[in-house]
Length: 248
Image (cartoon, rainbow, N blue to C red; front, side, top):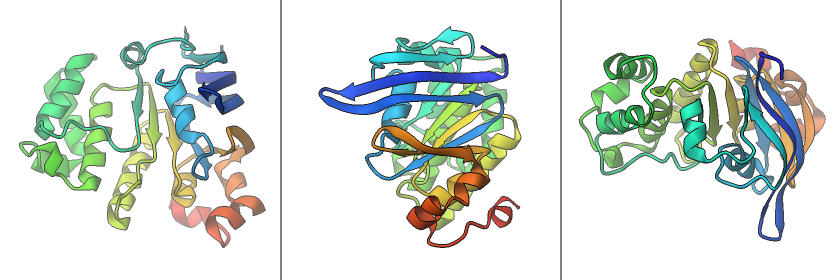
């Protein structure tokens, strides 16, 4: 596998009992790239993320993360290898303080940086979390909880971040803030797979994109190519996508 390839997926299938969720998917994610995966509800986007992170078993096909075959690798092992998944619904520990959420995440697999330096980097990206450091996570707003969920992943210095529906349930204000953070992570060289129903937002921060329907990819290309595809415009935008404006 080329060194520039962080993730390579070859013809994977996965099912929930008799229901086939993923039907022979193949794709690659390169170092420093942000790949958007868009599609309607029930298209298989979240199932794909669950399969890549070891939650949903891959029944056939192969997935490689860096030098590892992760087709049958448990989630906790993937986390230690640097593949972090932020599921829809955030996944913060509501009864713990913000700072304790971050400390627990760091303790699971301490990396090159010590905790103080790691948490300082998170607070630089999310100054609001620094203000809320001693507050219980369950008392944060939805947008702040999403920031904490991303912060918990970043403190482990991931090599690949799987982001599943980061704008779900957020106000327009917090949605804008979360996508500014995604853009900043991209600029810092983090490799990201972004699953998102807000197609316009997702494409505005991504390099390439895949469109899913019924467990299969029906369209792929650069983010701009996908955004300008008539099918995507009709299904998601209702008007032409102004990529240059969104990327500025």
